[in-house]
Amino acid sequence: MENKHNGIKPQAAAENKNAIGGRKRTVQIKFRVTEAERDMILEKMRLLHTNNLAAYLRKMSIDGYIIAVDHSDLKALAAQIQKIGVNVNQITRRVNTTGNVYAQDLAEIKEALAEIWRLQRLSLLKAH
Image (cartoon, rainbow, N blue to C red):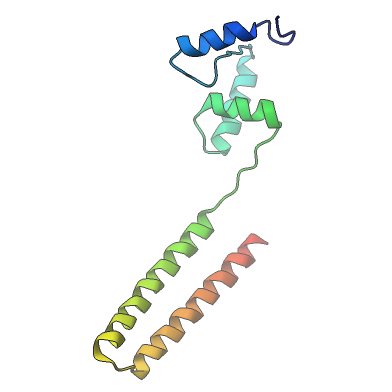
């Protein structure tokens, strides 16, 4: 029984899967575009920072759109929070080793927390 959409028999597709080393995607679709259309496709891919033409075309064919999200601000925020966390851990080790909590240690922790809140507010403002 042939699939009326692609002309491939289900049994042939299953046999083809084994012949191609167990690949999930066994059906190849080809189409032609003009040079101008190709250039537009490549430009859209460039804007999304992707070089994988097959993945891009598959995603666009199935979903009709791709949303690119810039996470650079969040990555920078996470890096800053990680650095602050390292500083707090160093203070904690010192407190656990000496058994004493110094005013300077508490001030550093408060500064670190204030910096985290500042970075978070800045990130949220940039998002709007």
